[in-house]
Image (cartoon, rainbow, N blue to C red; front, top):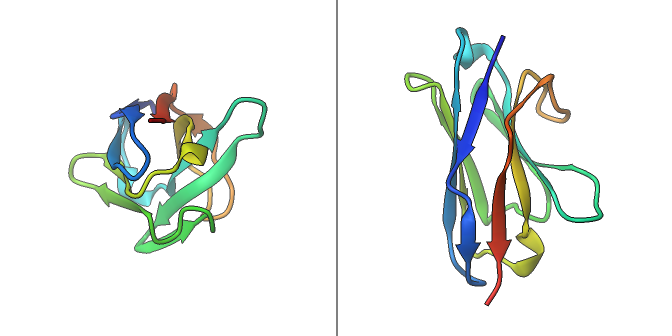
Length: 117
């Protein structure tokens, strides 16, 4: 059983930065593929970035702007978001247990990111 708790969302101006954090409970964190997904109003949830055993995968829309990282000693995964755009506005969800290309069973509650001037 894995529980995920996100933090770090908020309101930021276009061009700004935010860092999201996701703290995971349970054992074997380093073995899990961890990912960030997002869902904008009226749209389907989409993959943003995933991390597994040193490998990463990014959505094309965020590549070069967002960076996923993890601290296995702290059971935490991060999403550094730079050069934010209004179209990045969404609820961001942490996910565990999937693959680099698809979500797993475990989800966090989500954190709102709003990019607006």
